[in-house]
Image (cartoon, rainbow, N blue to C red; front, side, top):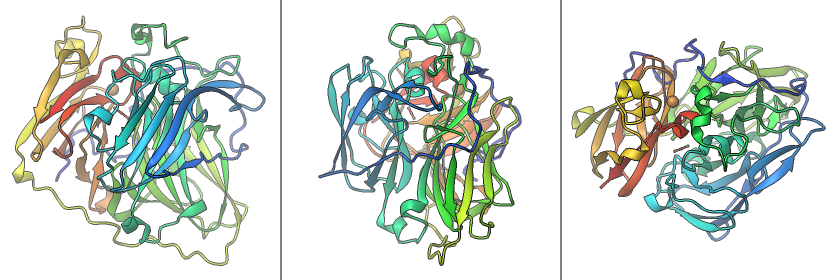
Length: 473
Ligand code: C2O
Ligand code: CU
């Protein structure tokens, strides 16, 4: 097995331990679920290999009749869905029209270090920067978000996140649902202040130090679920197959997604692209930053039925997510989910060059330099230089462990793991460690030399130093 876990595999649904974060109660009445239509973020396709994005402040209506100030790419939340092609280089010209320093990271991208969005490579207010992505990687549902040192949590919470779907000819030839029936679902939790503003413990991220969030040691949790920026929305669907690229873009919340009326998910892909084979699933657990590529078949659901997607995680958080309202029959549906989706070459465990033990802990455990208050990896944080150096062309085995929940993400490299339900192998870039759990992943060191980061994707943990450097040589 390429992934062994004493705390359960990454795909094990619902650990039952819940989140340790602080739930902020909204100070405005939240809308009735399943009334507001699901918005779909605009698509952004490159012209001559280039796209332009402007990070800016905008006032949007999220709760009916109220205004919420966001920071959004092109002024929308989530940002536009970037549609790019595997193997075709992409240039992203970012303009920062906000008042904060920002950094843009393409999460899951195999990107040269100088374009990867290193946390201190700031794009200052009114500045511009061009990021260049070779995209020499598999088709996959990636995403992009702010990655500013110490302030990723507040900046992403304010809205600086969007999907980036990398397609390929091979994938499109499979006949999976496409066009209007290929829908991104960006799921987050948020809480609202009395004036309709997003509630976050830092009033002004530009002026407050991250230490203020110590009360939110487990991460900031909201009591309202937004899908594509709308509170528990409804999508009218045909009685046909749909493909949904689901992203949990929450700061800290985990979901355990379920459907009712006997409808199941057919999972076709993960963070790193297609599985080898599709797998039917009753529940899909998703920690922050994880993606699931699924097909839902509504063809045998009677017209007029609302199929509800709920969060089965029993942690005191919101249980509603969204609803699919089956509105009409279709004459025919020529899409399909083939039995063979893709080939993933199995890495040879006996060829491992280096084994690393990486423990995601607290200062007191790790013996860090920061008075026992900081989250860390092996006692080391971002301020301490490289935790390790990895050599291009080698194969590493990482043994990840933790005491509490941490979704672990590495830049540049991918993790080869076993897919759920005998669906073969899968590629991940984020692995959800369970409390007291461990996971073993194989990590080929491929791509580009330079300095990258490895961190917890609970954004409050990341801002509280659970992020280390590693260099690739
Ligand atoms: Cu999604 Cu280092 O980030
Ligand atoms: Cu964490």
